[in-house]
Image (tube, rainbow, N blue to C red; front, side):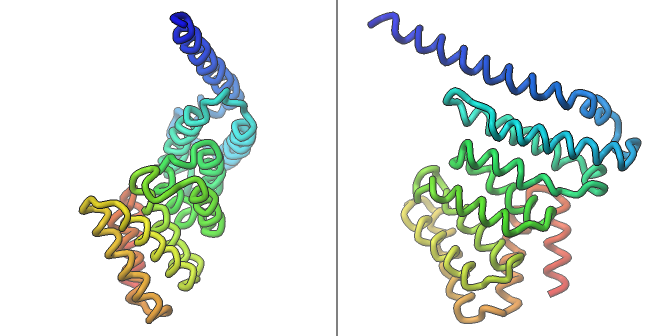
Length: 246
């Protein structure tokens, strides 16, 4: 029927508007803290920063339960943008740490497990900065249940991130070996050059770990992967220092 499309479109737009309205309303709960944080974090007391962390925790808990009317990806995108702001405030994070990083990604992966970019930041922020590799790996395992070798494209990278966390932060070379093997298997199913290169590298890494599970060379290789894919200069510096230490 000719009127069905505009009717569905109107309903969809209405749902998005309602969802955004709910998000904005929840955001107002944080307005005092956000206004304060417009100043440099250097000028805010540690107590105020800690109160902001507590308010953010409440905000994330509410977003976790927020109905999305079928637009889970909209909420996931919104939470990811919030995370980028949180992660990028280095002055505040030096005082309050990165403890909320996994909380952001729990919402994102629950709502949109195919949001591939999120896994890239999940590994570095939660394992490297927050010191919670168990949560990082658990979230990746959960997300992988909704992924397949070709959907989304390059989903094999999630297995690589998982393998790196298992090798470097959990000290579990056996689990890391299986993750790299899985990455190689998924990547090999895509014919493009990049995927084939990843398949070969992942396969070689898995084989090397199986022969030398405690080798420093395997750790250097994993830190090199972190360095080559670092989301910010801080991660690069950490990776370089760890490689030099080995």
